Image 1 (tube, rainbow, N blue to C red):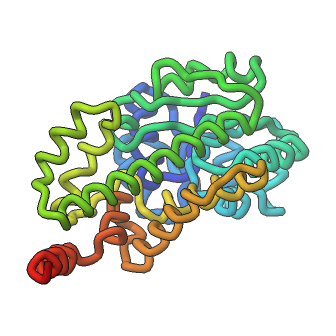
Image 2 (cartoon, rainbow, N blue to C red; image 1 turned 135 degrees about the horizontal axis):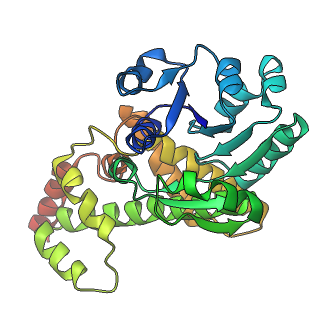
Length: 301
């Protein structure tokens, strides 16, 4: 069986390499051809265009940035007819309503659709330890579980299409909110002259601690946001998607609206492609000024 992969960016590339390491016959396509070279060198076939890939593969994995990219790449008038008889597995982060819309469009074109977004990043993609969440019919889940197990040993069935997309957005909302809250506390204690390690020692021994804090700590302290596993612009996109879906469900989103503003500010600072821990730069744009203000206030008092 030939497996297709469309989208070989930060996550698509290691996922493609994982399939090749598992001896899966892989055909790939990416709008930026240069990004295909590592997979070509590892043995993947390169499709010149989307219809050629669809013609060669019975199942196609999508790892594209958003629903707009999926529509552009897969659902143009020139490509729709090639979807007949093909199964499309959407693995990126999109909104539940977008996923259901894609299902309807692909089914109308004669294909099948399921969603399988993943939790984890580049290291987990390389080692096959992603958490894979599947929104599909039970029959589709059973049919494709062994393929998805290349990315995570126990793909989890969530429910119908839309349910896994919703769960993935909920988890990414936590990434945004937790990282912003941690950034604010870290910046505040720094401005007040508290040693960051003392802050972390107390935090680690409390019920407030989350492992992601230590994963991002050194990036924030050093203000080194290069070589991202998850860029700021993508977390901003996911936060906006969550906000729209949550508002449609009449949920209170005031706190997350503030997080969105901080992420947007980080992007305005030129950190769109940096690791999302760069939101720390938006929370604390000039820590030396903050510390100086604190010292001057104490002197006046």
